[in-house]
Length: 212
Image (cartoon, rainbow, N blue to C red; front, side, top):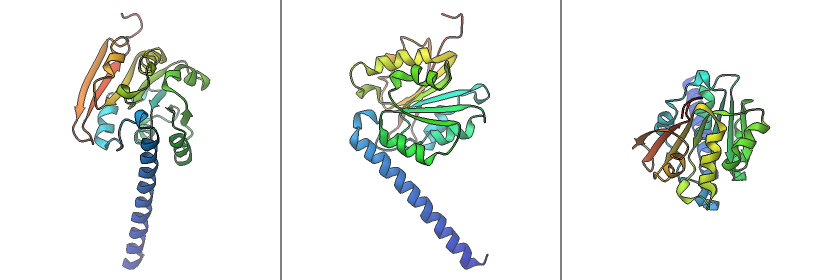
């Protein structure tokens, strides 16, 4: 390919990438406008937040990874890149706009996008042949969820996790701790400045079998 052909190819790739980003932002922004109380931020998480949140995951021992509130898939693709070939990613969202977008844009046999509530996670994973999840990730804004939903999610998440499993949460406030502490004996925390806005990170661990 001559220099002119290379330049044309580069412009085409740039145009396609910009079109993809524009489409993602349009879907994400529309979802925020329509359901602001159910979306944690008007801007998707940064790659630094994604990296930090997923660092503690033992991918060799992960058969089922669940995400609440996947939005446009900011975490979905990095999770799928790390999952083994026989593992599964289930994402749950109450917004049909996001679920439709993910089903159209992520073509991976390990990926399942479900329209539903995180409070029903136990039923959702059972319907797909699993007893419990290894890890559950959430960016849901616990402080603005409808009354009763946050404690329901906290309890259901604990029951849905295997012994030793992890509940990974990123938030702008620490309100989620009120719904995590009653169930998880150990909660590690962190903070990511390189995010808009900077966010709090939490990793809650379910007790191993036989432990209090």
